[in-house]
Image 1 (cartoon, rainbow, N blue to C red):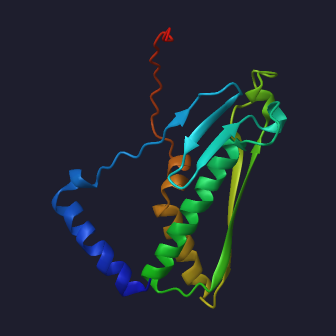
Image 2 (cartoon, rainbow, N blue to C red):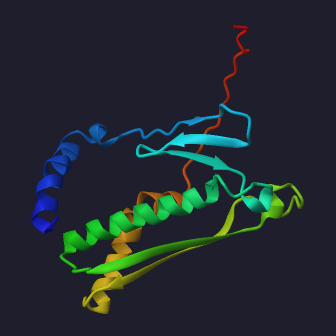
Length: 174
């Protein structure tokens, strides 16, 4: 996709969102299944079923995807797509590249070993390795705009309010 194709695809969407801001509000959803006997949750990703389970550092066997890995993978995917879109919009030639994310977790918090240890990532590092002839000032702008428009990055940096609820039903006797 080149600059003009991107503009052609996005122009009617931007116009609609300017005229009807409510039309830009979209609710994304994800569902998981707790069916089965193991300590796992199967999630339909749209492309394949992913079974998430315990990380080996918490007693898992390593055969299921760790939800922390999935979070980093979502960040890499979103940041990579966003960078490509911004590079296209700015007409910055990126011949190839890699996106890498890594995060540090203290599993004492997750396992309840130390109540003062945090649960979750302490630090996440996101790095882009690009093959491009673009000048540094252009790359700085590319990074700035990628950070600004990456949904997963922004969600992590400026965490939204999250409501948690539970519904239950008695098992059927069928």
